[in-house]
Image 1: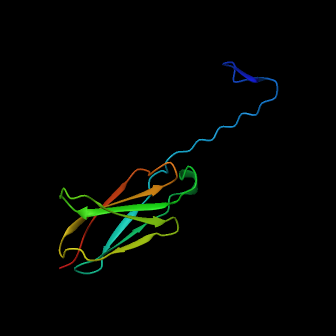
Image 2: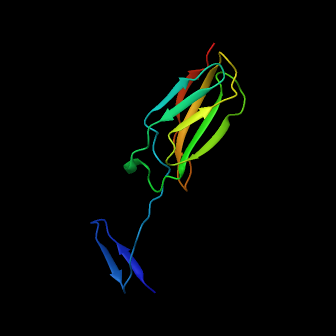
Length: 123
């Protein structure tokens, strides 16, 4: 049986032969920017900038977009998209209504922090 000894001088000594490998998997960091555009009385377009590679903390599987009417207690509608998608058009919305939009990256560990934007439909 191999034993690992560690002292506080940051030196590691091995008894027998053993390889020690650490993998740190985390959720991704923030989506840097989210923009929302009114496409008419019943639709919005949501764009976001990609999470920088050094902040993905693993393999970025995609993004999650949440939306609901601003100030409501409704559940969010959730849309999952792949990692190469940066634009989502949402149709069938109420006219002249403000919406709360949230976007996060996701890895196999889970979703990162949410970036929020508020956008209104037209008329």
